[in-house]
Image (cartoon, rainbow, N blue to C red):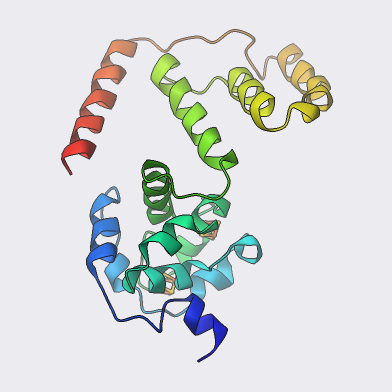
Amino acid sequence: MTDERVRAGLTHEEDLSLLHEVSMKTAGVSRLEMCIQCGTCGGSCPAAQDMDHTPRMLFAMLRAGMREEVLRSNTQWICVSCYHCVVRCPQEVHIADVMYTLKGMAIKEKLYENSTAPDFSQTFVDMVETYGRSFEMGLASRHYLKHFPLRLPGMMPMGLGMIIKGRMALIPKKIKQMDQLTKILDHAKQLEMTS
Ligand code: SF4
Ligand code: SF4
């Protein structure tokens, strides 16, 4: 048995409950069950070399019910949502959307090795819930202060240039009819709790 087969969960008995759970939690139709393990996704992925497991391997592990190993993988955090794999997948599996589902599950179950990316996601969500949009200045300051404080001074010239050229706001501005977005987000949270 090769290391790759062990890492990909192919030594485990098939247990489709996790695969179905992830599929159900993915927005729209995931087509996860249609994966034929061809490997086109990993071969197309610009970030694959930094991933613990290629998308193909991750989906094999899902099929094997390897919950903790899948949710602890860095793969979903390394994915940059370029959708290259999605357009090339012969089975039209919605790979990038599945990655978002896995991120959400890992955050909920606190199964991640490095909190940098989950914290960034949470900060982004906080901004959207507060202002209805991203506030780059706040996002970058909060993130860098918490995780990379020593890099902040080096970021300042770029930030200042963006502010001067009007590419980044100094003060956050809420979208119009924020109350309607809040209702939508509340409803989405309720649906998530009951799913
Ligand atoms: S390209 Fe599609 S079918 Fe092939 S391994 Fe990846 S997800 Fe599965
Ligand atoms: S969407 Fe994610 S997994 Fe797919 S090719 Fe891009 S980085 Fe890789």
